[in-house]
Image (tube, rainbow, N blue to C red):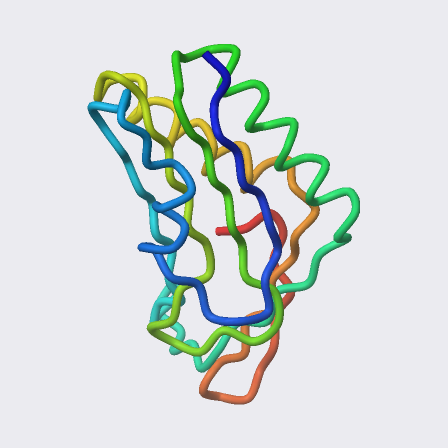
Length: 142
């Protein structure tokens, strides 16, 4: 079985439903979706917004590699990894990962593997702007 795949970096707001549509398949009994959002507080500091920057060519290649590895480890029918670049205000979505599989355990395990791999290996940096006016660059994603 060859899994349907979609990886992208996007400057427009992300839609979990649209990302999930990339992995829907009649042979899938489970779809797991992870949605990461910009939170209001980080370690006690009030966040105003995040700005994501990526080394696009390498980031997409690493996202593809993670999708390949997930498909090799679990029987997946679909994998989608979409990450936002640019400014993401509090409450908006930064990343959506969707995974489909005939069974829930594989979908759940693969989705966790993908978000942890994305945070560790993909060259995407975020700049946090706080309410006090300070700015901090963070790597890896957190």
